[in-house]
Image 1 (cartoon, rainbow, N blue to C red):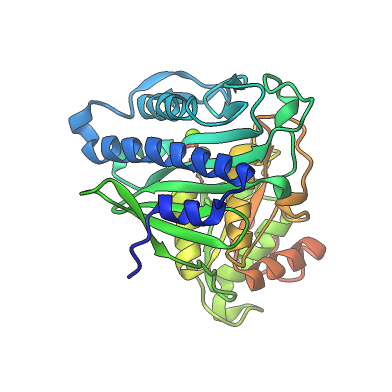
Image 2 (cartoon, protein in one colour):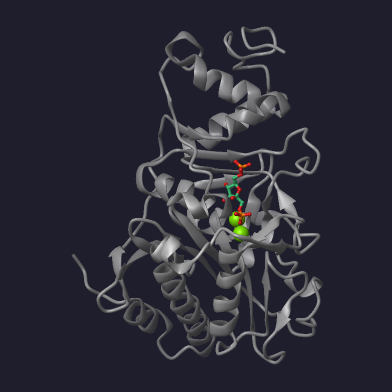
Length: 345
Ligand SMILES: O=P(O)(O)OC[C@H]1O[C@](O)(COP(=O)(O)O)[C@@H](O)[C@@H]1O
Ligand SMILES: [Mg+2]
Ligand SMILES: [Mg+2]
């Protein structure tokens, strides 16, 4: 096993390039906060009620103690980083650090909040973008940059192991936290998502709210050997985007959080700037794909800082299959699950 530390990896990547050194320092600050959050998460109830509600966040969702603590830790660490401003799921507006600096950071400080008190993996998602000259970093507008312009992205996963998954645009790599030394060590030199898979992840309790395209695809998966797919499939749903993404990086699969008919979900649930974009960059750099159903996530021109977006990502052959359902939604409609089937409403 290699023993290269995160600092050594970033130092080798950045060399003497001032722009890269700034990105490396910013990643270092996020890793520092991530380590602190990891220790707190591992204490669980010994650290108090981390899942206790504090207030409502900008999304109108309950902000839990750990959401707030994670946001505060990341802000404290990033105040020392060479960034113009940071945006967060937990803040209405960007927080300005140094308007003359060349970087912006967008954060989901704590992803998977509903799992905080269940001892299930949760994480921090980050996106590092350029601060475009002339844009006021205090404004939402400064952050409205398509995902393909991200300079780096990744997440810290607080699970049985603490992992830091990172891309600086040259593949996706993985680090594991050594708790004895507090150092992240490189443990996956090149993450590669399997091209072909039979595993899918969706919150199936929303089935009756889905559009035809999703019903058609999931119907085909559920029909297994009895349907047009001709093979049985398997389902997983952790309920933490970071954990579902991590499984897909490790063993392939596909994740779907589509738009649906519920009030507040017509544009999906997940946030473009600090969930979909960074995950899409990590996934593409690992050889997978990320789409809304019809468009590549990284090509979307954002229109709002806290914008929601349908998110589908994972193994390429499965994404192609889903695209076929978007092109022709009834093509794979399965007898057990389709409009005319057993589970028909
Ligand atoms: O409870 P649902 O509808 O299945 O949603 C689960 C999704 O919500 C999220 O928890 C949203 O993230 P936050 O916890 O940061 O709000 C994702 O991690 C997860 O994929
Ligand atoms: Mg989240
Ligand atoms: Mg969150």
